[in-house]
Image (tube, rainbow, N blue to C red; front, side, top):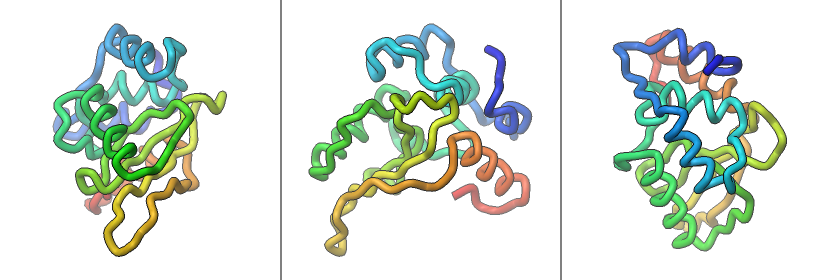
Length: 153
């Protein structure tokens, strides 16, 4: 696969910490989570480069991308928050407190990053919020933090 958006991730595989998915595995996920339609290009690239493990993302305790999707969707239902559009979770926040995701139906090859806050602690209402960055910008920011010796989170 030619990498168009996530070149920073591709060229900065520190300690070989990125573990990819095959195109066949990506297509299976597209079938399940996007009605068989291809994911946006940057989401596909992320999975192709680091779908099993990514040096700048937290995939939580899930043993596969499929399990992470199912776990976070279950937490979403438990929180009472509804996301009716197709989406892809690419990072968990504090286990089950929330997650970062991209909508899959925006007709953008490099979609915007959103967060879902699911934690009801301190009377916080579950909510969806924008991070104000595309997926490639978010990944480049995390890689830059890692290169500078800062926390990626």
